[in-house]
Image 1 (tube, rainbow, N blue to C red):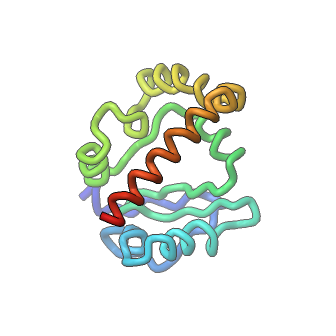
Image 2: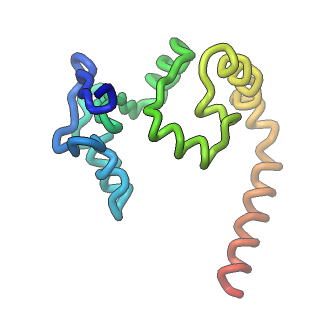
Length: 147
């Protein structure tokens, strides 16, 4: 069965041990302490370049901890394959139009459209609005907590 086949890890990238036979490393991330599971995958097993490999079900996934490396990977590929079981849950949570689940030309089109909004200059121009909205959100949350 294709979904039971264990695909090989990414060559040259250290792999996190102790994976579940069906779920891979999902139990580490789904444990009560998500941060601890993420730390185990992303930090404790990373090489000197901040890379590690873990499994989502039977598919190897690359964990990248340095921003410049993330930028390089995202600029080199427009295809990201999700496990069908994981994709089903992500689609229910984010919807089918979320940039995170898009692939190919559609992803490239939307990414290039929003990329300009997140440049350093654009964010600097919006800083006062971002501060105002953040403060409004914080005040609203505090009022709800105190109510």
